[in-house]
Image (spheres, rainbow, N blue to C red):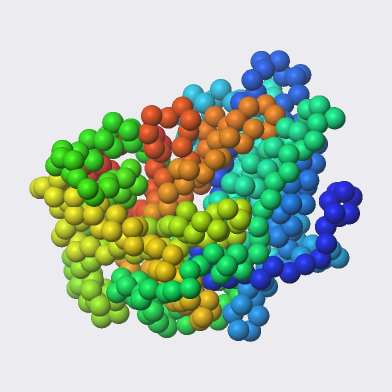
Length: 493
């Protein structure tokens, strides 16, 4: 701790609209490590080294020890004050469970220590009354057989790229501390200056598309109310909302062979100039499954009465078209702005790009090839349209009006027929080696925000993708019964 304080200086990090664009959510992952030695006396990820290396890595990520502050105009800052630090939550405990029990259960949530997850879906005040910018909970398993680590960072300060950078740096420092004392720790550079995005943008801006206007230009009373709330109060509000609309989550696996089969259906088995990526196929299959689950729930007798019709009429009046489905694709702008990618930027650089479909089209079951072709084309066209000039327009919208972000959240929340998809498959979390080997499995939380799907970090031993799906509890049965989904995926837990 003394070394950490010695190298820390007081400073303020100004946040941008890109940070707050995803600030309604946390970034929580649970890691499962196995002790490679059967001898319980052999040191395995020692507690003192884990904590010391955590503090050493934190020196290079000082923003994570600051206080989240918003001024009267809605501008956000993280204030790092040496005399008043917001130190991360870091806990460690012992479990009577053995690693082989978790492994035999396929790392199912029912088998995991119930107190491992220490945060909710949205950033909220902890026991200290403020939002912590890192939460770590370590549970050691019986006979030193393994370790379960939960680590969370709120989207207010980083996106998944920044989260991965911190976790890998912590692991790298931990390994270095257990190695040759004469070896030097490799030097890394991390860019926290939010102006790095401005420097990477082209001088021109495209016009906002009609789909983007529906989300980023619309205003609502809900958005106005949310814009008045402090980060802590907003977290309380969102958390209470998840309690009122409970989520049900499952993790599925889809093989590369299944992806290829679906791609062949989408293209008619012919060579085409249109690129159809794995992400296009996954987004299409996920959208179809959730849309059909929503449609199946709407047809239940208890949802076909006067009140249900009134709700649909209200949605049509507020949103303009209650018969459309929205797929919100979370896109990282770094690959599209070379200077930003080269800068090693670890702040928020994710934006949600909406794709709208008629419900009848995305729920089409009689002609899977037609549905796959049309829906994947919509995803591909939208992603291809994310040019530097288009990003410039989004940047202008996010930062010109500080309430734009909260209004966009409200628009997404009010749409019952939607899914938000984030592709985390390229996050290098499976390379986190704290000196005793990489994690055998990485998972999200037992439930999350409703109608949110994450394509999880790719396990190096996997033959495809693991998909985490958190949806409103009542629509999950329709998803599990969907023929296309059942045929091409396998339920893990």
